[in-house]
Length: 110
Image 1 (spheres, one colour):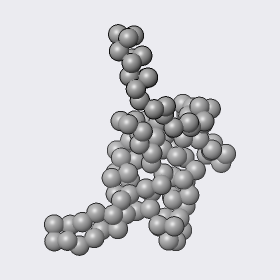
Image 2 (tube, rainbow, N blue to C red):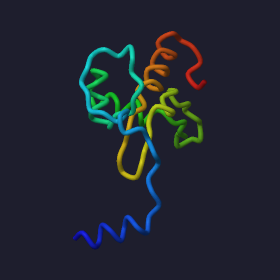
Image 3 (cartoon, rainbow, N blue to C red):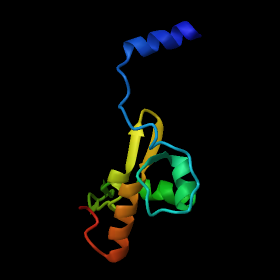
């Protein structure tokens, strides 16, 4: 098994260099100093949001088309979600900024 993993690591380029200290698993309720990127399930716990709600926000983050061709605009949360391979991460500061924009009734896309 080690030979297979070693050959995969040699063939594929190195992953993006995110700060490993930012990818911490925490369940702190203090959101004032968040500067990290968390895995999807850890982010749901960290933010105090059910996973289903976070999944719904991600699904609706991009603009999409109805069967009749009408465009349904996204909700503005697209910059907060990062996908690396099959792993899904949430950028906490971007998520909170989008949340604040949405709650204040401001522009959701910028």
